[in-house]
Amino acid sequence: MAAYRFIHTADIHLDSPLKSLALRDPELASLVGAATRSAFSAIIDLCIAEGVDALVIAGDLYDGDQTSMKTARFLSEELRRLSAAEIRTFIIRGNHDALSRVSKELVLPDLVKLFGGRPEHVLIDRAPGEKPVAIHGLSFANPTAPESLLPKYRQAVPDAINIGILHTSLGGAPGHDSYAPCSPTDLHATGYDYWALGHIHKRSVVTRPDAANRNVVVMPGMPQGRDINEGGAKSVTLVSITDDGTVSLEERQTALAEFARVTIVAEGSTEWSDLAEKITDALKQARANSTTPELVVRLGFSGATDLAWRMRRDADLLMTEAQDRAARIGAVWIEKIEIDCVPPRSEGPASTDPLHELRTLMQTDILGSGGYAAALTTLAEQLQAQLPTELRDLLGTDETGTSETLEKLAREGAEDVLARLQGDPATGAGSETA
Image (tube, rainbow, N blue to C red):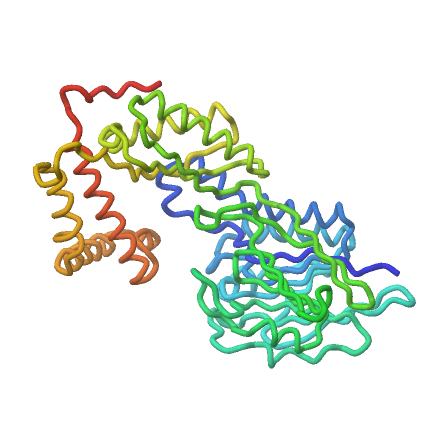
């Protein structure tokens, strides 16, 4: 008896706009900007190659108030590939899709079901002797859903395989607003065989304590990360459900590019050539650990080193060094470098070391003072007010995030000043690269 098989994905965010990345490296921005489309095409290819019965998209196919009809045409063409292969598609709108004008205007192929703002289910007849499949769905009508949508879903269809599609924050997760909150226990209580969720960008699987392979709840994560905060390999989930309700899951990677943080400990490095070799070794290891075609790295440097002042002064040269070595390895990109290095402590008594005294003054009396924080906040607000609307989130998307960013920038700036004071222009002005 054949299982019902489908690919479950969510949070694709087609053609998601890039902000800071586009400012730093247009070539890299072009790669990442096309990655969401590449991942979606890979999903379609996977559906066809596996010969699945359906593709389930649990919300946030788009990224917001999308106006480009090029995106709509791309989506339509890809979904028609599935229809030509007689594979059904089931889609619900998430909080981002609710803002999208295109999602409401797009004419979809016949085998694509876009659920509306009222709960409903589609009953699929199968071969003689096999249970029918009931696909339940409910789209966001508005970009906010502060209360659970679960009570609106219809009861499980008797003697059928029941699959629910829901965009929800569950109990909440860092970096995600609360949308249609509910709990895995609530979902299990519906008696559905499988809940296909969306919204949280990290994959998770929740099973019933008394039946690990039944009434499964899956958040598939996103198929393609878009920035360093969405690092790691991304995937979709291949689901098989038998007539007795047994669920089998396979994670399948789909991303074109993976974001990764790579840290280099510069402790003890005294020559620029030593640092350059450490960059090569770290990037080679990161490339070997990645399974995606492209790797996008945020390179961090830490530790006490005599090169601290020079690294900060010549950060542009350090970036060029890293980019050159990434290019030699191939399929590796440097998104940004972060320098958290400090000069070695003076051998002399702290009380006689003027730089030690200055560091203590800056870290305790200045950076830790409320007056300094208030002045910094005022300056940041003035800067943000002069930026274009699409760039005003660069320092943070809320008060807490902005405060943390400003504190980090202030401390980095203080260390930059101290590192430059530590350096000796007479002996350390060289900036040759290895």
